Image (cartoon, rainbow, N blue to C red):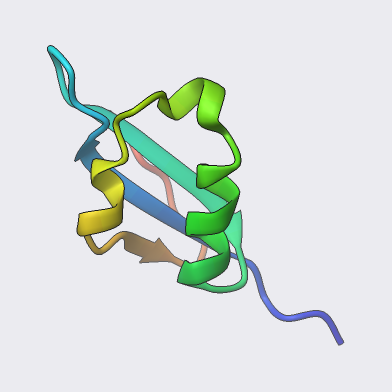
Length: 65
């Protein structure tokens, strides 16, 4: 059986002039970080999400930003 996916959310990251948000749907935090690092065209040189712990969502929910 496939492991349950979770939504990993890093807020106030990737900052240049304003804070950004990064998120990934993955089984583990490490996998989520690896997915984001592959998105170099989106992240550029701003990898500040690596220093932060993400919020993790694994149930029904909604987010408004």
